[in-house]
Image 1 (cartoon, one colour):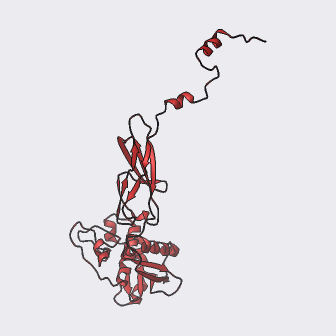
Image 2: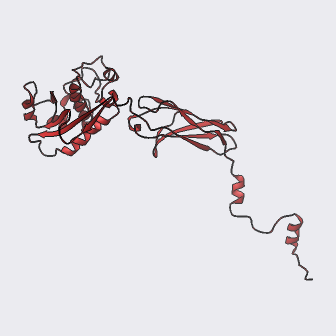
Amino acid sequence: MRRLLLTPVLALLLALGLSAAPAPAGAAASADEPPPLVSVTAPSVDGVARYGRTLVADPGGWAPGPSRVRYEWRRGDQVVGTARRYPLQPADVGQRLTLVVTASAPGYADTPARAVTAKVKHRVDVRRTVRYSVRVKGRLGPGVDVAAFRRLAQETYDDPRGWRAWGVRFVQVRRGGAFTLWLSEAARVPGFSSVCSPQWSCRVGRNVVINVQRWQHASPAWHRLGRSLRDYRHMVVNHETGHWLGRGHASCPRPGALAPVMMQQSKGLHGCRANPWPTPRELRR
């Protein structure tokens, strides 16, 4: 029988019950990593997933009990909130939000767990569907993009802050509809009615008329407030369409308040703050 000759080092290892084989790469590092906490009860979201409401994070149950809990509300890849309570935003409508709860405790690794909301709805359900068409009158001048006018008008109507929050859904059709949204040459606006001015936009019967000069340049009063042209465009579409919905002109309720969208903001605000959208009071009517 052939005898196995042991070196002094190998003999010592065998005596200690150890192997001479090298340890797997990373074994020592993994032994030093802290363990994660255990999610005993999954996080959840309390509240109604509807614009205008506030969601509240329930962190769930953890073992051991965490010393700290962090919250992240995510819309897609974007973090939109880091508090336990999250007021739903216009951009959330039609989306599902992900709540990420991260628990921490001494001696344990930070451990995340997730919950997903229902799809966020508008402030109210649809109560009325209105179809409308878009037309152009006169020469609009260089730089006027009619396709962009169509898109922004529909965005205004779809926005959760607009008349959609009153339960009205607007659908753009090629011809006909309950009203026509016009983009008109300024000089042709009085052609809709003698009460209309070449300086401003107007509503006459089933015609909602946007003056191209206002569409392209807003108004001096608006510019003095430093507000954007896009906000002006939302405001003027909401204002003139509000007339078609049966709303009359409103006044500034008090200095510093949001201007009602039915106020003639193109001409001045009388101490109110510029506002492109119907106020809560206008939406309750």
